[in-house]
Image (tube, rainbow, N blue to C red; front, side):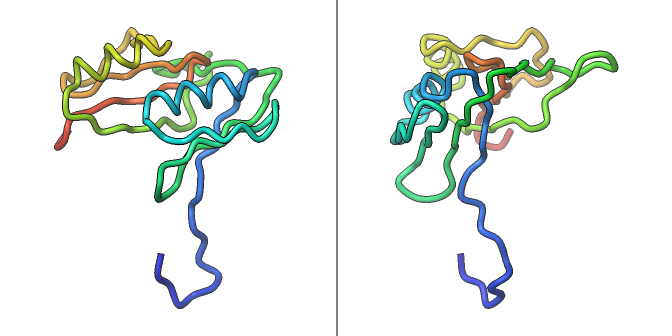
Length: 128
């Protein structure tokens, strides 16, 4: 990032909560091909060669969000978007790694999946 304002923040990671941070970090590492840094049992990082990555922190009371959210059930607060070239192949690969497809799918060229801890994430085609 190039900035002349020293007060401008730089995003370095999005942090997910998990009862098993190392397991979830390994899932995203396998999904993306990024490097997993297993810092300790309560914190792990998943990083590409360049740019922001993911971190996973221990949360013993983790409750997965509801997708889509309802009045009585908490919805997601954020989700991750991953662009892919072959949607069916990418979905199959994610499922082999432990993801499941969400019941509700709002678009044909996007697949909403849930990671092993229930965080929603999307796989989508270019232009979607």
